[in-house]
Image 1 (cartoon, helix red, strand yellow):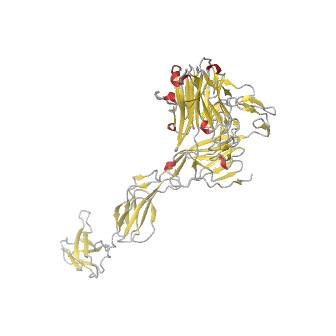
Image 2 (image 1 turned 180 degrees about the vertical axis):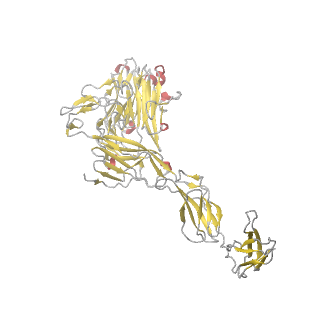
Image 3 (image 1 turned 30 degrees about the vertical axis):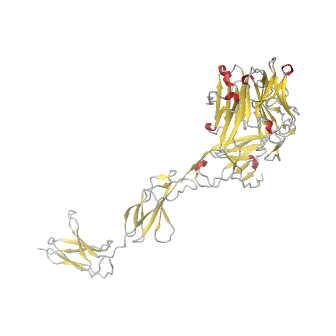
Length: 635
């Protein structure tokens, strides 16, 4: 199939979005005599430290209470929980939040627990409305009393109903609701108290229906299955049990989360679980359940969270209370109204994991996904470990979509769990992978000199101790003459020392060592420098050398007089030893001034053969002559 190149997107640098997936489960929001809990859940690759549960301090009932006992939820990857036993019911009443932190962004989800025995019950735990809509906040009377009923907003009195006029359903109405009307509404009889009140929370979207953005001028996607458009991001927040860009994909019974990978692990599934998501969603039951306690099944023909959706299936489709219409072969769509095979949720393939990189290199990860329809460029995201969201720099599609991202210079702080994320109308997939960024090694100390001559230096590499990360796979010795503008030369080193030959005499050289680890960009910076100098070039041996016997105990050594013009002190060095010496006798060294040209070698044995050699020394030693041989006279 033809490979189509989609437009190059040049904003791969990334901005922080609300990339935090956060869910709060409020089990038994009406507290009776059963155990009740709160569970705060985030993506499994996030750290447990990033989430917490606490009491809402704005709530009057929460003052002077014991701190919560928050524990890790052993059944889930990254979740925290608070559990109240039956006998703790009275301590449970009040407002709570689950908080997630990512980078500098904080997401909070609010919820409440109220007494099952309250005189009124709210119709719903939360009510979400668009700006300008007509909204009713309703409380059902559970117990009749000869008292006035009172309604409060955020703890302040707003309305009362005389005792003989209290209806079966108390209502607060807003014909055109505004954001400032949002808050916690409570209802009770005047003789009651905070602990016999019923609560509900009104959430008002900043924008009118179907609008989002800073000035509410952008159009929302059509969020299906009771999904709610977020006024700041323009994304659909899907009810528990649905996923995808417009919440069209149903996950089935007892599953939730934005990729439907979370599940209700209890015997009754998601029964008795009130799910709360970030505003403006609020709280609802999971798909297939309704009621304040989420303990009632949907009536036939209805499905979804709080059972608010009607099936209306066409073309022999059947209604499932968790999924909606189950279509017969050859049909798909919310009501089985579309012909053809069903959409396929995206699947992420061939993700490299783990990835090891060297600091400072360019990183070009690929996110490859299949699905029907094929994921488009704007449907891919790459989440860095700190929550930064990157968009693809390029996308290639054939029978799958390959999104390429570009990070110009990767740094050690980028180490951590990254996530490839793709979301289409057919669902959502996320896959984490580990990125480790290593720092190339740099020697801590400069090289040292082991030995030197006029044309060679032996260098001790001295690089066992290094900063940065190993293992070291290559060691280079860099060198150049110190006084000349010349580029560095380099030589690969095996072992701990290196002999450099064919150097200039009496010349200062600079040295440093460069270490490398495996992978692109693995060469470290050169380490500390040191300078070493070759010896001056030695003089050649004297010319016209002769050695002949003078007596039984002496030899005569002579050479042509030296004609050197040098400010250095010149000396002639003579070494002699016996030829048939068995190694017992060491050489005898004699030094004479440079202006002499003969030497009588005395104190020898008669009838012995001797060997001599000569060199001319200045500040540096000269080169030895070849050996000369002669016998002393016999006695």
